[in-house]
Length: 118
Image 1 (tube, one colour):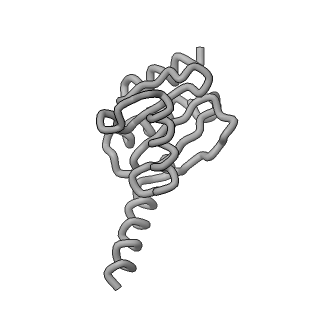
Image 2: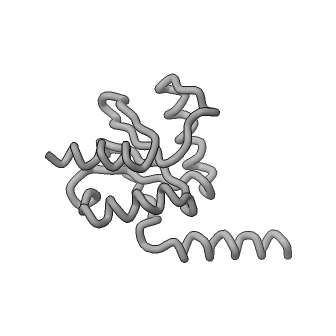
Image 3: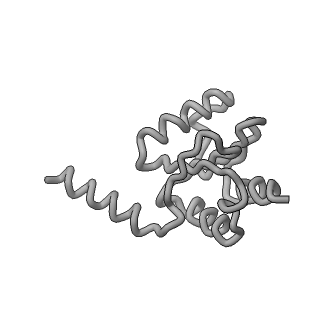
């Protein structure tokens, strides 16, 4: 019963965070954006990305990592492959697949993505 209540609460949190918290799984995307569904920095970045129309202009794979175990594994694999210390990396995290150029943080991620529009 307790497990069922926790699952219902997690589902409510994910749904109540708005339409910008939807995964976009696209292995051919140029950029990957890892985020937490209830992370205030990620919520702000999601808002900025939506207002700028970035997801309509760029090929971005978007993966939620706080509640999605599979996406957590993918995030850990990427961080390891890039050669970063996993304990010092958080979300929002964006990287470009071809160059492995990566950033952590709302302002840095928005700058990377919006500069790619130019």
